[in-house]
Image 1 (cartoon, rainbow, N blue to C red):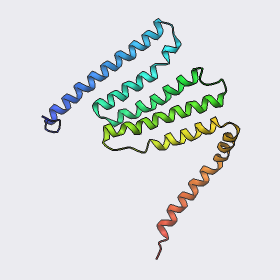
Image 2: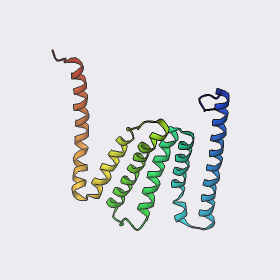
Image 3: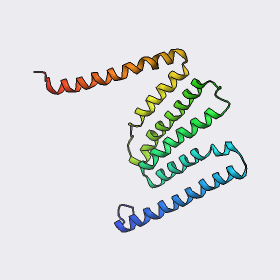
Image 4: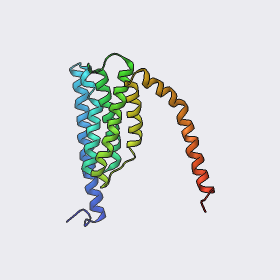
Length: 179
C-alpha cells in the first residue's frame, strides 16, 4: 500500500511517529554534543552545535520530505560553516577577510536549500539563491579589499536608486500601453 492509498488517519499517525522519532533522536544528539563539549572542556567541540543542528534539520526534512525543515537546516549549515572557518587558521585575523569568508559560507547554506529542494518539493526552488547571491556578492567584495569596499560604499546609493527605477517602470508599464 502506497502512502497515497493510506487513510488520512493512518498517514497522520505515521507522520507523527516519524516526526516524534526524528525529534527524539535530534534532542539526544544535541544533548550529547553539548554534554561532550562541557565534559571535555573543549570550546572547539561547542562549534559543532550549529552544524549538528543543521544536519538534524536537513535529515529531518529529507526523511519527512518537508521543505520547511530544509530552510533552517541550510541556514544553520551556512552559519555553522562560517563560524568554523572564521575560527580556523584558514582565515587571517583581518576582519574583512573573516567577514568575506563568513558571508560566502552563509551563502553556501542558501545554495544548499535550493539543491535539496528537489528532494522535498520535486522541483527546484530558486528563491533561496536571491539572498544567497546577495551574501555571496558581499562576501566576494569584502575579500576583494579596498576596491570591494569602494563598490560596497557606492552600492549604498545605487540600490535605493535601483528600487526607484524598478518601481517607476512597474507603474509606467501599467498605465502606458503600447498601441
